[in-house]
Image 1: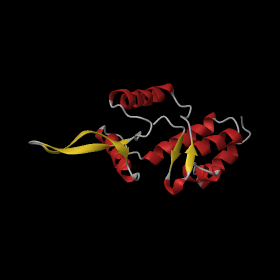
Image 2: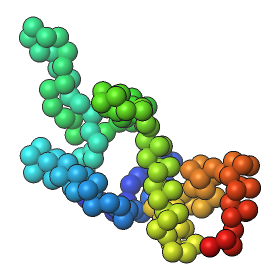
Image 3: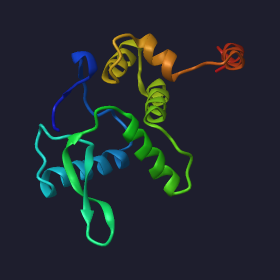
Image 4: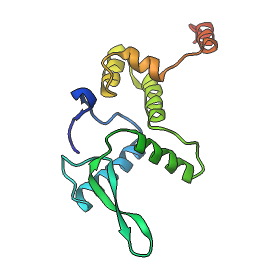
Length: 154
């Protein structure tokens, strides 16, 4: 926690910072981060999204009892947790990649030029902006035609 880079599979390092999003989301994340640091006493080497610590609780069987200091080895469990959280409040079951898609669409509005978009893309862990565009900004043929018809209309 607290680092500006993340080690990923293949020992690739991603230099990143919190993206400029709505302050409400940033405040929520900051409160969560503060909880981990000040209440759970997590440090810089502990996982930002830790696994639950499971134990046998007398009369109840297995239960989540606290947070482990380690994270998940892959995204499948987090994907399940995130989908479940949305389902629990009767919302569509979004995945972590849906958040990335939303951030990429937002970048299309906030980035003033291609250099800024490149920086945004790098912050998402992509060496090539084509990866960001192809993965998170799909354009159907119908949308392509609509965009081209409306170009220069403003």
